[in-house]
Length: 408
Ligand code: HGY
Ligand code: MN
Ligand code: MN
Image (tube, rainbow, N blue to C red):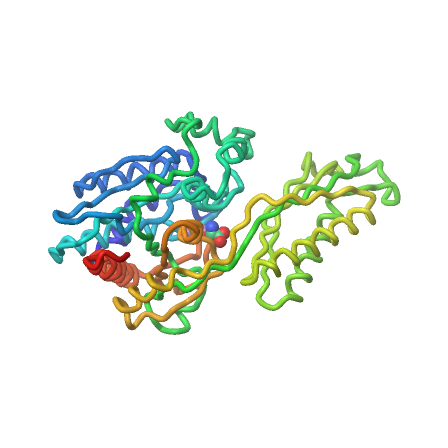
């Protein structure tokens, strides 16, 4: 009905991860192919498309008579390693579908509408979540961002240059933000809330504060066969013990989450005692002070365990996003447009969460029958994808059309 499933079907072959799901790191070939797919559809609809100095792609629809700051929707196209088909692309495809629905309704909107596609939302390549929206909003200093490196050791500056952007121009962009009245992001639900409620679409209420910390443990690299167990200073053992302690610490704090999903031994040989092990902790809690306290406990634990194993440990913050309560006025407008939609919080971060520090933002979530995300098992039924795009059209119309009183 809205064509969202068909749109997603057009990109299903892009960036397939041989291990299952998708591997679409920011600024990579798959990301670029997806971006071109989006630009093609936007231009085919006569939208005015441009890519800003932070690499965000904007597609503008300025209906006759519309003026003032835009009502913006959109999401991201990059994925985590082994990611699902909907985390990000559903929001972009639904934005295209919503504009098709609104055009078919022949609406006379007061405000222009834009679709924004943000790069490197997952932070899978450079470690900093929501890199594009963070640069736009001034949530990260340009020089810190440009010095970030990927697993190949390429800096963001080098990657941006190869991608046709000038690193000297990245950073906070108040001029672009001045043209944005609000941002409404549609996203696949990354949980079972809507499944349990038996509803297709929800309005977002909040985002759990979350951060990422890199832990490095240094020991003594050596031979697996000639080194007696009593003579070892094995960082892999210290890391393994710490991972279990992190799990136990998080289990002991209601609503806390802590995850170690990535671990990198050096040199990583089967018959080699590692000299160094790096691993990353993703910690989250509704109260930012509790997150901070959990990280302090983790720091203490890894320092103690490393010392017991004859190793040395360091913990470094790589990304931090505070808990976000979405703009109440905007949420009320969405609630008036979608009276049957329940409200749900999310434990997942989003560009809408980062932009909330600068402009009113809101989210819509679409039912995911498996409730699983950041995995190939992430799912949205075609009929729910249609519900989502129509709900997004209703929401955008309520905000853009109701702006006649000048308030957004
Ligand atoms: O990690 C997150 O919460 C989001 O999917 N980037
Ligand atoms: Mn994600
Ligand atoms: Mn996402």
